[in-house]
Length: 389
Image 1 (cartoon, helix red, strand yellow):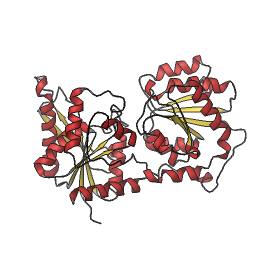
Image 2 (image 1 turned 45 degrees about the vertical axis):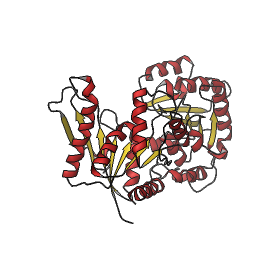
Image 3 (image 1 turned 90 degrees about the vertical axis):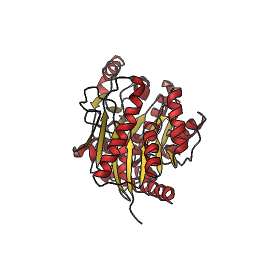
Image 4 (image 1 turned 90 degrees about the horizontal axis):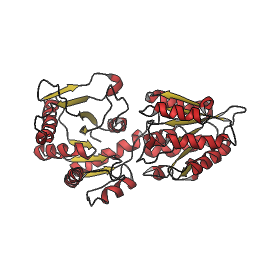
């Protein structure tokens, strides 16, 4: 099997100020490098103070690159707003030329989200390279795209050799805009070496712990869209029936202090801990210590944290929205409840707490192999071979 050279062109990627922004794109890149050589070009927003029209730099921070050659490109804000998009396209073209001059000549361009798909398709046409586009944007199912953005997506998807939505739900939402493309679903990915059941429980089918509170874990942005307020209200109802649980919230966001106050007002403060933003390695350790994972999003697409929880062998309580039912697709994996329904979420949590002693963590973890680096990486390699044929 020959290794190809793949250049990711992405609008989303981790940065020093936003270390978890677009982290799922980096996970895809890590999957690809198992079978192919990969580099990443991150297209940034305009920088008004930039002394020159365009600037490209190679990222040196190993915490951000994780061994993947990574480049960032900026462009100076245009004095005339109508030329701003042209500047963006030119910045990607200039960065591509610099990457090629540095010795990385791609066989395939792999864009992430339609916004990066537009310059990727233009580059593909100019240099006769196939283009694939992975789409992960929840604005499609939430119907938030402007007419201009829909036109960009329609053109990019229609010109691409393959479009890879991460879920059937997302593909359906794209098609509801009247957009047609050569679709193939390829999911988000999880590092099953990092996210795995705790060793001391990995050789048994069930586990029990006496007189120890059940550890419930939430990982995500602390914003209303993730249903944090709904979760706290549901737990206030749970608390009326049983108090043998604790909630860890890992993540940060603009509404963190409001949620801290809400937890205190509901009398939950002794049982709820806000831990702030953590690295992937730290999140994996939280999952190994947890007994139950909860993600009550009001809307979501295909959240990587659910795949990570599954790989850690955690039963899941989540909302029945977006691509989540495609992941939590059998009763042994967890319980889904209607988004925003406090009473239903409380009942799902109570049922999961009652059943926790019978959880089969290795079985749950085995179901995550369909999202592993090796599985998704091989699927993407096969896509590259097909578009190169």
